[in-house]
Image (cartoon, rainbow, N blue to C red; front, side, top):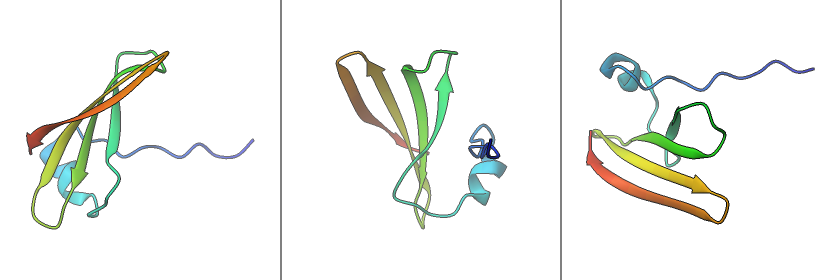
Length: 68
């Protein structure tokens, strides 16, 4: 079995500053379910953006919450 890669944590400002700028957000699950609600952070060259994602059986929706 291969090694599991760990998703970077986004829970502190210091950890978010260490992330490289990217188009794809880093997601953190809210709760234990595979689907459900996720909080994302996308770092840009100047600042970042918070994103919410809802995943259900027939639903997948992302909404920008605002600047970080």
